Length: 181
Image (cartoon, rainbow, N blue to C red):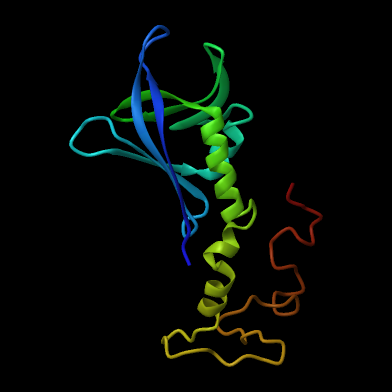
């Protein structure tokens, strides 16, 4: 079952050190996309602007500066208020947005209760999907036979053993004392 955690809030688009304008935004987290957060900005245009980036980046950015490239997040104080700044960069331009720290933190805490940190792979069911993928016969007809341990037998080419490789290791230099560093 998918869980969605949403929060509408007003962010501030910083235009200069003296001027900012309100931007209605919606923070969205979906348990079926557990690594990501989605932000939709309603900027008065025909269609809203959507950004998606790592939840981990947003969580860390509440406490310390993080990110590089297109998305950077950091905490700061502006006019006596604690805010989370988010700098976004795209080919269409750059934007610096401020959001109240308390609102962002409360929303993030709700997302972390839905899918705890480190639980993203489980939420996606990756183990089950990988098991199903690895236990399917290439023609797609169904599960492959497995041995007593539950492992599917290996098929296809294998690397030659030491004897077949002329007594040398599988890689040149194995016997010459050369080592990768």
